[in-house]
Image (cartoon, rainbow, N blue to C red; front, side, top):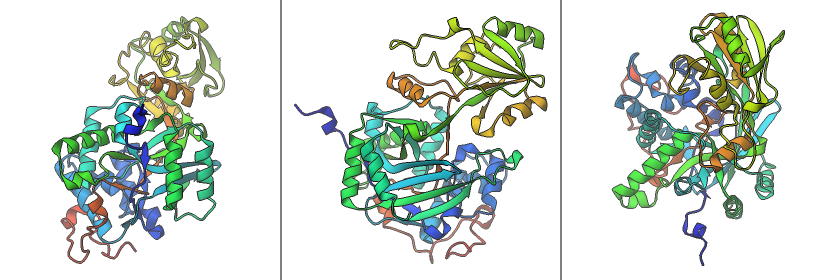
Length: 470
């Protein structure tokens, strides 16, 4: 009998990527749109006219007060994308390729494969999620992808360690990369002047048929892939695929990449996962003494002379009134880790919610309660201390990060992680490789001599030569 998997499209496929010319790649690649606020994005992109932030956050180039989700913003992004292709900032590879991507920051190195992943595999659960999506954010990504007719921001996938994949990537990266660029790590807190941290991005083009076939087969042997980051991008790609299939768009749909989504897959055990810490705006009407007494009903509370960054699950740091406390959850309150246990119930973010935030502080819904805020681990403990000392927040909780095995166990159980549970480093960048949904986009380039930019007040390119950036 035929195995059901043989009836499905390949888990991954090569594609004709759109990528920047090597000499200006560093001016093109940009942090993903949701790691900066509008002020940070505008400052970052101001001196970078080719930055992909002009696509992902096109509202920064429109008059102040313009709704970033208005049709005008998506049209602006589309015009910018058209212009970058027209003048040769972005060029398409002539034949389908895979791409090996490596990001290096200091001693941290992560190497993965850029690929076109199957939407069908995602819908069938072979590419597994661990996070719920927000409708408004998903709608925004759908409109962005449809406006560009391309996916410019890769999803961050994980695969289990595979000697076959490792060997192939090692062989490919023995040769010089096709593209190499450094870009500031804009994820870090600009108030601490950490934009000087730089990440080296390298890209190798895999265009040899034998290597392409070997990589496809090696990934096909993976029982499943996991979404680490990019749930909204992936869900948006699935919605677009369903819509285009139902619309029966004829030849254009039949030969496009709309049944796939742009992704980079990394071996799970090679990644750095950080915690996402919690800040609270008030103590739910309690004074500090009563607050600590209530916590002591469920935790061992120990004052600490130094900052507390938990070194193991079940431990938490509390910062209150310029003092640190070490919290250890009572053993009887930690769920059993047996094979039948709920993998979500034992996560530290869930334990903090169930044992402290909800019963002591009255925070029922961490997704919506305005009294709760989140700080990615990349910002360090200073990101917890400063808001409390400044009086903007009342207390802070430092957490131990969830493990990748926790993430995969939750996904395999068909469950979802609590909100703001994981922070992966190093973050992917936009613009290194883009996936056009319509194959014609790689062939029917507009003539730069006849193309007209939008009005000068609204377009960042007007003072730039049509031949490219200086």
